[in-house]
Length: 86
Image (cartoon, rainbow, N blue to C red; front, side):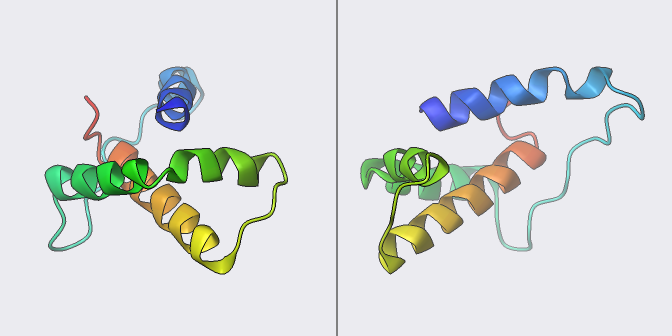
């Protein structure tokens, strides 16, 4: 959960900048906060957050790991953008 914690901390000061808070973004059709959280949990259990860390530190990933990392990042952006965490 290090990645999620870091992402949440990064959001904390965003509203204080110029332009204000844009508000929650809508989720893609057919998705819910629960369905996204469920998929994030599945990827967490596969160890994807460690792969995200490895990739962000310049480590190499195989094609399957890269796909999981991309999926995880996309889901996390949707989850946080829709304010599912609040």
